[in-house]
Amino acid sequence: MNGNSGTKYWTETGLRLGRYSAQNFDQSLASWTLINKFDGYGGYPNGNGGTWRTYSGSFNTGNESYVSIGFKAGLGSGATYPGGNWANLSICATGTTSPTPTPTPLPTATPTKTPTPTLTATPIVTLAPTPTPIIPSPTPTPTKTPTPTPLPTATPLTSCVIKENFGSLPTWTSSWDAPWGGTAAWGANDYLRATRTTAGSSSKVKTYPMTANTNYNVSVQMLGASGSNYWTEAAYKLGSASARDFDENSGSWTNINKFDGSGSYPNGNGGTWTTYSKAVNSGSNTVISIGFKAGLSSGNAYPGGNWANLTICPPGISGAPSRPVVQINNPKTTVQGASTNNIQTGGFIDALRQSLSDLIKNFLPS
Image 1 (cartoon, rainbow, N blue to C red):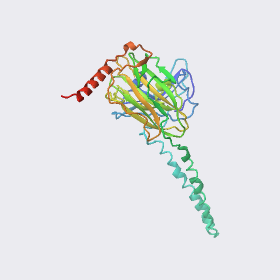
Image 2: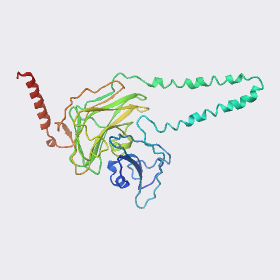
Image 3: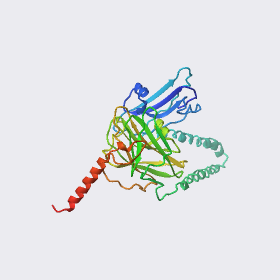
Image 4: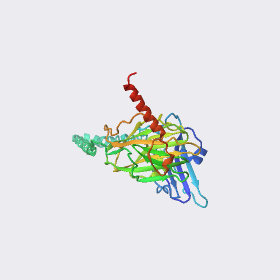
């Protein structure tokens, strides 16, 4: 996208899995994932200095075979629209880079080097000092020596750099509740939990340290029940980013896992603790932002958000302990921002009582 600055305008592009109309993109923006947005209200970048830049977003197709891409140009009264400019839309599978066709012009540049020596060499042949073509032989050696330099950047790690077990609520770097809805209640007691009784979108972000130019696996365990018109997410973004950025600019974040009730992502996982992971190279970054989000559309019940055992580890090293395959029904937890009178503990106690009863029966004579 290429954008100039202005006032009272907005220029957007976004995606949503499935086949949706332009009216849906305009009126149901919360259901879309922004790839990039410029505006003149201060909520997003006010253009990018009129420079063509690439903006990307990642998604999982789930059971969808279509994806809708939207482009939007808007202006408030009494202002001048600075123009919307988009180019080179591409949709590629993870691990296959669409821009890789662009390096193909590089081989075309090498033939231009070979004809030039042959043209100058033909008159030299008549002069007998044709051995001068030996000069090209030193040229390949400098091209080989720089290539080993990336090897020292791979610093092997032998243990995980982060193990967050959510024994209590973390000290969040940033928190955000979208102004169009209410707030969520967050608690932690061996796992992180979010509940909400009103529509809205709430995010928490914590920034963790990491080593530059290093490969990591970012993993988190999630347990999700099914519902409708909700979203429960865990994602990361290299560098320091805010919870508001996670909510309003989610296209620039990488999903570790997401549940929703609109068909774009899995609708829960049957209430089973499951580990979800993403591989990431830190590049030049020395911090990574991890975000958790709990959202709900109006007129629905939120099925609850459950996260556990966040780890950031080198490849091949697992830092998360195994969790029992149980469905947790409104367990007791310490809640931030809501009355604990609203939290039910019956499901957890009943499940514990039943497990003890079954264990005793197995050891008593029949």
